[in-house]
Length: 104
Image (tube, rainbow, N blue to C red; front, side, top):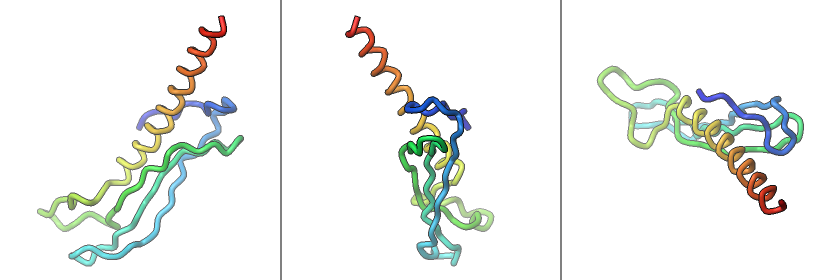
């Protein structure tokens, strides 16, 4: 997983990858299905990155059956949340650079 960049608002590196989940039902094989979401939160100023979520199976399907097309893996969702936070950080840096250049 990519390294989480510092908070674009306060500069802190005290960040936490937050997870929330709720069971939404079962698939056709009676495997519990959860709606899982991740986002990065600064523990100093409470800034939050974009939430990345998807449906996750409680455990892998039996051998020979792949992951359904509608399902996600938790690792992919974690990567998406970190990537969303890091892109947000880059956007703020670009804005500041442009503002400083215009200011003279």
